[in-house]
Length: 215
Image (tube, rainbow, N blue to C red; front, side, top):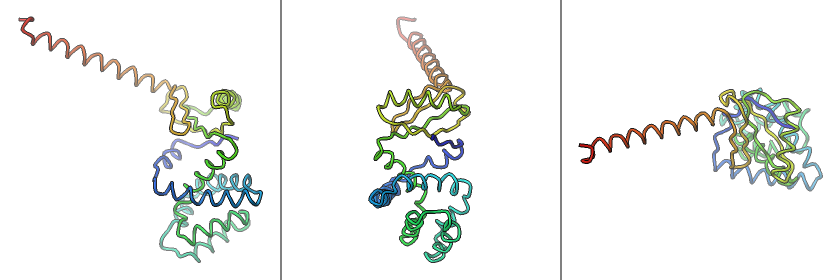
């Protein structure tokens, strides 16, 4: 099932802290390794994804509270038990408490994202961010998924992002590779080419005007 989020939310998570990313991979690998051994990796990955979309995204104050340096470990454990104790699985709740004990709850969102990426790799899936000017319907999602499956040779997991500035078309991000087919980008490219041609023509004309042969 593809994920969907607004341009604002996408921008909020676009900055990448390399050190935090590396740290997140350590915790994500440890969590997935333990979850896979216990036979609950699928459930844990789904639960962490839900933690971001259903808890952190709509409740930024809660995320800031968990990341706060003003609260000690015991305070945060109490908050986790009261807010997530009856909603989170023991595996995930204990993992959050481990993060609290090591003062790493400020990395929670990054850890959840990296965990999802590693989980997809374990299951032979490829994460694809799909940016469009307007939301696309289920039929378009199905067609795009089929096309990406044929192109990538794997099982794509779509993350849908709406960006009105695209004007039209679609932008696909697969890892570090971006496939940009938006109308906005095509217009920008045409504009740059037109400006470049104009500058070249002006420069050529000035060179002809200033050359001895033109006297």
